[in-house]
Image (cartoon, rainbow, N blue to C red; front, side, top):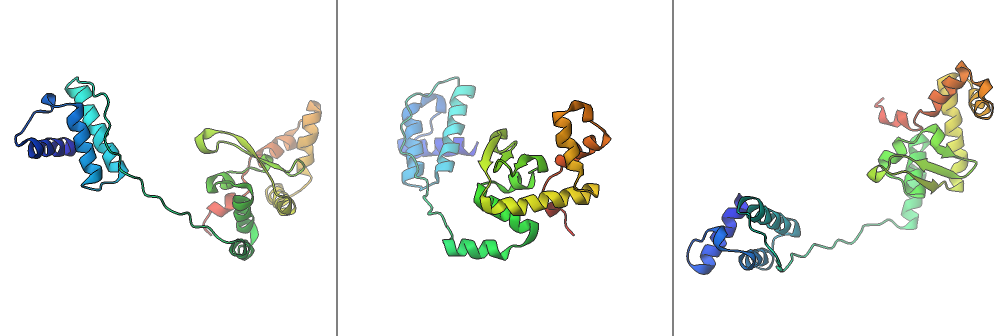
Length: 209
């Protein structure tokens, strides 16, 4: 409604009289949008909002199609990215210890998002193949990323730690992998192993001590 009022008032100022939007069209809308960008210096988002509002007014209310709108577009501001030097990155990575430190290194080394790291499950990490299966990433898409060699040992230790904390034994995992080869070997311990594999590696980082 605000854009409609501004549009009508702008045209009244230009023409010297109030006019109904039905009496105007593409030329007047173009002039109004150009004024927003050139004279009022509004941001591109605001200009787009005004355009969408007027298109809705004409199409849905007045049943008039606007064609050939060629207004001067507001310029989007350009920001230079702020990046760390290699030495600053090394200092940062060296300053974060434990599971949190490993999570930060995965963010940097694998290009993962924070939510993707925190959602990683034990079975998503393939240390033998040197890769990580990222499931349900941006756009709900799956992808595979390379696991840096420098993180193979730390992440393997974390996986073993998760096994031991959950089951009390690191040997339970073998029942799962053996059952995959031989279905007859499926047992209650195998089912327990599957449940452990679905646990997140960094779940405890989400808990406030």
